[in-house]
Image (cartoon, rainbow, N blue to C red; front, side, top):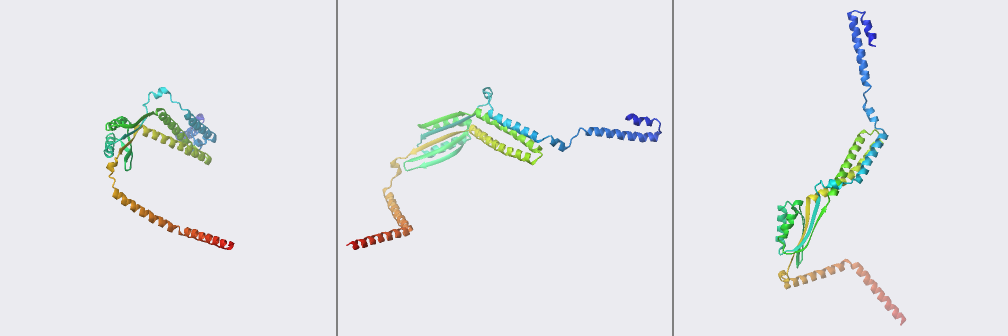
Length: 301
């Protein structure tokens, strides 16, 4: 092709040669541009590669990832290289000489160990005062909490300490969460490349279902992290009160008895007034029955 343009140039003058030269360059540029254009693709061409079959295959791959993550088996050797995840819990019950001082001591110890009171209940009667307190402290300070509280106790009624190893479950939940997020990323890629309404709806349904599972798994992981990072001690202590210390005031309680009895009598009359239609109906019914009985007895005589 180039010989076709170059051969006439040898027999023409300078101006004609210049014109032929420009035409030749233009033709060559067009040829190069057309050849380069054969290797380019439009956006629609790219999206057309994601046919329903390709999307279906991607769904199958995603489902396989989810199915395989159910069978995740953590090797015992790998668990040995991971920091143990331990949940420490305890219960302790004891008698106190002064519940107010004991509560103040527990609060002071908990604050010094960067803990807090998760529960603080008090129950009292004429003969007994009881407190139930739940203290949560960082796991490293659990033993210190138990030692500091036990030092002020004369005699412990009941004590129960338990340590649960949740390392395997912790690692398993983390692995499942990672697998689910991998599938979520793949679904998002499919959603951006789906070219029909049906595909979009299908991907969105799968995403909604998957995100529910992710939220549930994240909630379980947060719970395990909370239980591992903070240990729990349930403390119950009580104080008994002697009858002599209750200052049983006979005259005062006798007056309260009369007052309560009078109030009860008033409430009784108020109750009768509230049901007066029923009482009236019952009274009339009895009067009619008695009258009929008397009349029938007179006729027999």
